Image (cartoon, rainbow, N blue to C red; front, side, top):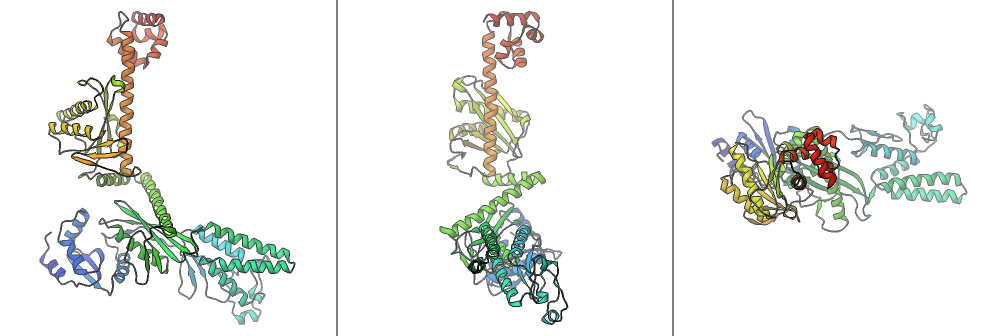
Length: 598
């Protein structure tokens, strides 16, 4: 790729150090921000080759100015890259599609602290727990806290001097048992602070101490014969244990770790994270990253981990990931193969997959064109094609016991059946059940006519069968001179193997993938269409042969009868009046009398 003298100088003078580089266009608009272990090597790699990805080639052609920032380590570069992407929002960088504000639970810094939900953090020394990805979870936690530990909800300034001066009076909340009445010194600050400490532990996911304290208190009340109060405490224990049981318990040995997984396709990646504290999953969230330059899963996951740890204030010293990643210093990276940590990683991947499926369903409804474009792009990649398979034709042969051999050609456009373009064929030159010769005749007839009539060739031909059927179909394309103008594959039914011309080793794709779903649907539709035509032909031939012995009834009359009544049985059961209406009085009587006797 040609480089201007100005760019060449900029590249040559880059340092061999870790850092962040920024690309700008002729109007000094930011195009791209990236990180590198070695700035000179990384930036040079953009200009010394033609890239497979068209967008990358377009980006490189637009670059006029290169700026850079040197940092001590690559992890520092990762953090700086993340901040600059969010600040500058370059056109060719990954788009983080989830940037809304999430709710927090605040323990306010004040005498007798309040506990409440908020979406705005105020730097006044208050404690904030979260953010939570579900407001339902926040409400559940707040309700649990209120049930377990009655707290004040008023915004009074409960300083010691204000309380002792008798400035405040207890309100309705005190009388109905929702507050301990600290405004009139009916609850000490020590007792109140113990409740806040217990609430802090619950918000961190540690239920152990709270449960132990409640159980000890319940036993103390019971031993003092205060059974009514003991029952109230037992209700709180049940409430806390019920909430704890709804958290996904993983292993008491695994605590304070974050789990990250990634699922990606051609246009986007979906990163899920699970936060594990005290052996339970206390938070799960999935974010979408829109690809811009065919970024690798490693690059995307590193970016997502940095963003999620910053956004959700994650401070665990261990992360569980599917492959090695570069992260901040001081964080232990675990890539599990077995055991509880592997199960956690599998659970995270399952969440990412389900999130992706949900998003794709929404796209299919809201933006069907985008949905089709994505599937076509994926099929092009999976099937190793040069163009998207917008127009696909599939061939299938039907000849049960060698009788009435027929073939079907089914057409899909943009991944969906185009039934008006379906074609069926009566086999003319082949005797008996010879699948290879039948396939050769039909494929040749189909594309000979397409060429003669100037119709467009398909992007992809799918042959129902194995290497043998594929070979004869390829021979037909060569005879017609279109061998290199259209892609052709075959699908062997037993193991859903995809064969390519000249390659004895089949391609196996996941049957659940969208590419295979389209191909299998295509093949099944060809089966259905071919079998229906075959049955109709057998039925017509059966009635035709049976009526051959009716004197005075010719081929035209037989065809008229079949087109109207559709089956032999209906012709036999038809009344004289119905037959006469269709083929006239004289011939109607002939057919009616014949079937009455026979």
